[in-house]
Image (cartoon, rainbow, N blue to C red):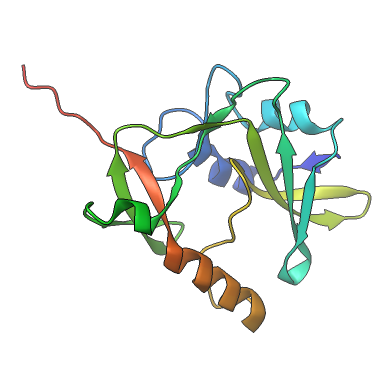
Length: 167
């Protein structure tokens, strides 16, 4: 599949590349340094899953097992972390919950959120790991909002603990 990426989306997606500063999933720099490298790697592949969302958006999930693990999964079930303090950080204007962990699990899966535009797809975002719905927001239709709220009531973002060295 052929994806196009606008400068604004390139900036948005950069959160998932490079040094992990926010909670959530991150690509390994040794595999993909930026969105262009990721899109080149998947353009001749077919996703194993396509989920149609509202407003013409689609979620395409790829398995890159032949490449190996390409990033970390920054998502977990809240019920598995009941002993952890829940923190809040702002991501793209939305306050989201996260907990700190010592390490994140690796994955060979990649999810691309996009919409069809003529013969190609316009990228909205991309992240390592399996599909997860967007955070609830007022532009979702009622069914999608309900599914998103149910998902995020059970899940939480994970962030690697930032250890401060005492010298």
